[in-house]
Amino acid sequence: MPCLIIAQAAALPLSNGIDYVRVILSLVLCLALGVGMAFLARRIHRHRVTGATPNLRVLESIRIDTRSAVHVVRYGHTHVLVTTHPAGIAVTPVEAPSGTPTTEDAP
Image (tube, rainbow, N blue to C red):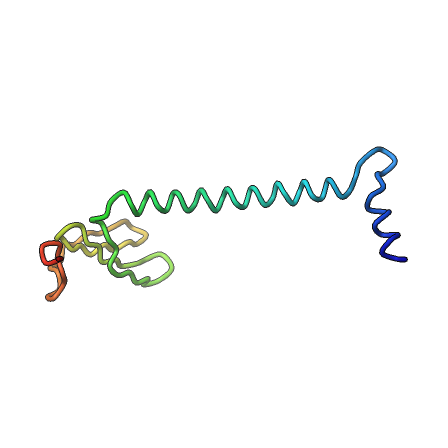
């Protein structure tokens, strides 16, 4: 009996013609579409960024503190040490570690 009363109350519109069930379902549908579009946009953007330059790779990163970090980046055959800090960015070329496969060594 209580379920019947709740179902009837949910199906009845208010005196000014607003149907709660339709409003809530519409809101849930719009929120789901928004979240889905945001997820899709992030995924497409991430694919474009990583797929655009296959020669550029971040090999390692370490955070020194909340505003400073060190990254080892490879572009083609060149290895670079990139240091980010509040005063700016420092780029230092480094030698590739021995035993690092290059594109010439790849089968």
